[in-house]
Length: 255
Image (cartoon, rainbow, N blue to C red):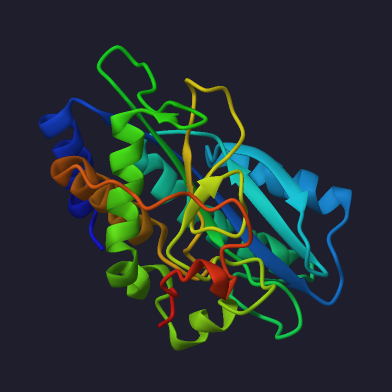
């Protein structure tokens, strides 16, 4: 997807609502065979600094030899470009160190899948975050953003899961959301609001796999937010329990 689609989605939010998105990404991946040591991570982080990739942290994930790298918040184009560039640099650096890195959505049938999680909030012309939530009190901007994202989620699945193999990630206990759902600090939902202060909320979009194109994913998310704001779409009630349970009767992401 060319840059002009992403730039256009940002400009529409600015022109129509006076709001600018601030984006951060997290990408999960596996290593085959040997696991990386601290020397490997120091070298990879140095390579990222040389390429001006704003890494926030790297952590061990649930799967065996599975890790996650989180990027610093930035503007949309930087986030998309640097996330994609990281996968290239990490792949090259791993091969130089006799390691094989894997950004597939579901490399191992018996291990959790790997996601590309996008964090986003909107700022007004004064640089203030317009996302707010305190129990049942929620700002219109946040409420309508969630509503628009959920409304467009089923149609956006080919972007979030671009390959036939991408759908293997959406299985029970796979660490991936399975339903059209949202909730506060609930890792089973598609749209999550991580813990933060009431007036500094952000959305974590948890649907895309690590094999998805970051630029296409971010563009789809911004389009969904604009759709929600334009049409004032209210989301369904938030989910407090396991959103995959049939008792909630939620639409499934994979039909």
